[in-house]
Image 1 (cartoon, rainbow, N blue to C red):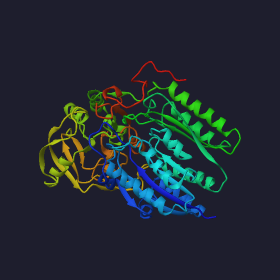
Image 2 (cartoon, helix red, strand yellow; image 1 turned 30 degrees about the vertical axis):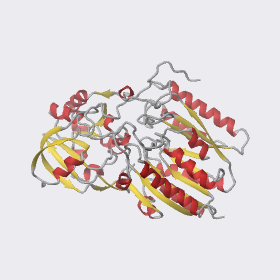
Image 3 (cartoon, rainbow, N blue to C red; image 1 turned 90 degrees about the vertical axis):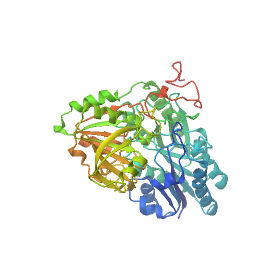
Image 4 (tube, rainbow, N blue to C red; image 1 turned 120 degrees about the horizontal axis):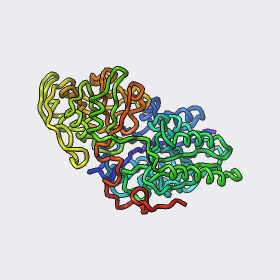
Length: 502
């Protein structure tokens, strides 16, 4: 039997502490493609869509793709942008309502819009109003999801990433598609239960390379091989979103047609939730100040490779502005040489540099323009323009392999021994091609200062002699007390110390 499946990607992770809104142009800067054309751009890359496509081909699905809309994490989605994208998805469901056997959505799980704090739950509510309560819906999630009750009440199948850096997207897409196939064929009757933990995020934000969640991910994979257990998802949460349902969750999708599966699912979920709670203060990262990180950089011997410094707090991937200057200023003050600092998201500086030519010496303010209270104000820098570019590159690493991306107008400004990558569009460091494409060879640098929390490790840790992590005080600082929360449910750890977990 041939099944008809509606698919869509609507992915944004939204920092409610950031000024402004995510507009349609921000989705277009990353990916905004309607219809089947999305498969040409994303169907063979490292995406959930690629995993979905493999299963669809193998099972002979008639696949109707509504839209692929993805934006780099930033401020909440504007109402206009949200309603447009959600409208495309719901309109496709309405057009094909009588033909659909299932729906598969690639979402994030930490989407906040201008008018609703649960973007994914609202989308699913609208879809259910179109297709009714029983049609099988499968959803893939980033593991940095804040999963609400509305979300799990509105779809039967949930599969989250189990890697951070996120390198299992194809696997996750395939997993969700296989579960959807089983449900549509009547071979299972999936349902999902949810457990919440009263903390703001998992201690290490879900790291899968080091820390207490590593054996938990391995155990989850083993549990998914048990009869009746279809998917086990450990979501670390996203603390940069001030919403009621902020925090880690455990989701277990099980076959409700199988006797005792729900009881086993509950036991699995409870054990994982208890472990996350018990390890809430077991932090793996050692956060250095900007001065401490600069001192490490100055002392580093590059004989065995570069020192990689993660500018953790200014990670654009967590919705930070990406223009904090605290770490860059410290490196310059310390006299660090043969270094790279990437990226500084500063459209004004990028435009100004494009008014000049490669080889010219220019003086201009760089960075620190969005909110100097988080990570420092502008630096007046004099340097030589080493590269001007339209910002285009094609990823070839574990996260961006096969994807065409662009920083927008981009320049490399060389200042006192440091190559500074100045870009227009927001993006964290995920792939070495984000440097190679602009004339910077990361293997020949003594120091690589990269704006990213964890994803940089997939591409850059293999060439690093050592990795250190810096809290530059920017918007995504791990010190949650620097942000004023008004919506999150209370009590919650670590804002409240007297919290119990039943």
